[in-house]
Length: 186
Image (tube, rainbow, N blue to C red; front, side):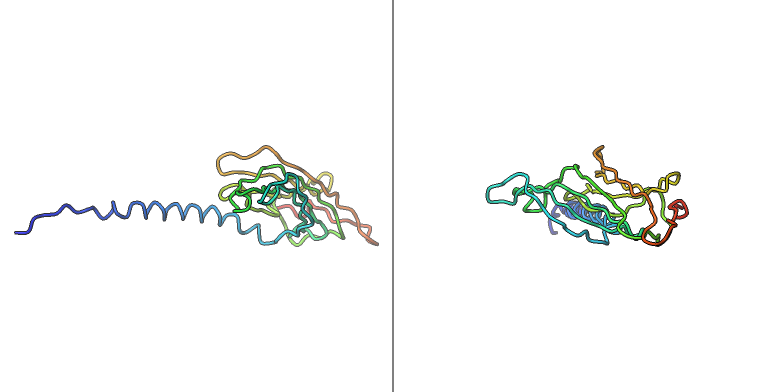
């Protein structure tokens, strides 16, 4: 008769693998939520160093431009801090939430479709996981003004730091009529 050897239950050997697979699924799901609104890449206007770092990238302020994907004739410029150092060089630094924004009418305004108050215009990741910067749009229907808000949020706790910019919808060129944003809010 053969002696019985203790066997490891099949789930015990696969426990760490299952945990890693579940963690990967959570991360992929979190990152997938960032993709739809980040379809448009912002244009880098310039960067300016703020803190010199020896042998690694400096801390910088970077200014970007982006066009509103739903409202033609409006562009926004925002400035974000970018961390340098070893963590910044490796792309694992959690960026701070100090972001400023300025939006302006740059041509005749026309709407490509209806939008909801607070729709995301642009979104980008600000850390390895779960922190993102968002630019959202609304319409002050009483004053016929587009309102843009930039803020950062995190899965667990967000930041109250934000910046707001407004674009009054004005006639452009020879036209005397400006569209009313209220006609395009769902």
